[in-house]
Image 1 (tube, rainbow, N blue to C red):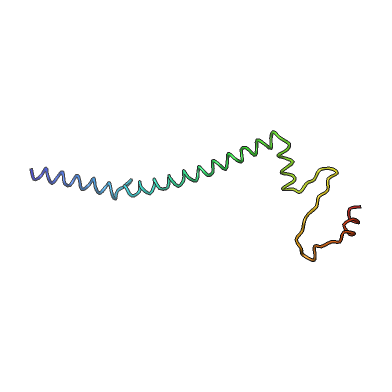
Image 2: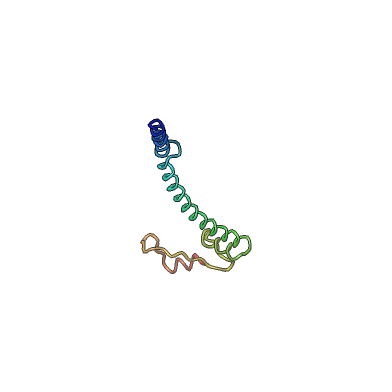
Length: 106
């Protein structure tokens, strides 16, 4: 009976050791669960970004309005017979007189 008790206590000790310190122990599992949670949150953010990019690509493929808007905002393009005015700050080097502006426009 003492041998059986000693055997069962030894078996429980070995199982407990494996549970807490062995390969695939609880601490490792907890750390992996934290990493999975963090990666899932990152994936949700990336998924929403991908959805926005996909909608933008579809707009560019299907409509000329999106292409025109992008050309205007990013490339500074203007339509034919359209004037572009750039507003500058009150820096003295950037000021131009109205007469000089009229000469440039002619």
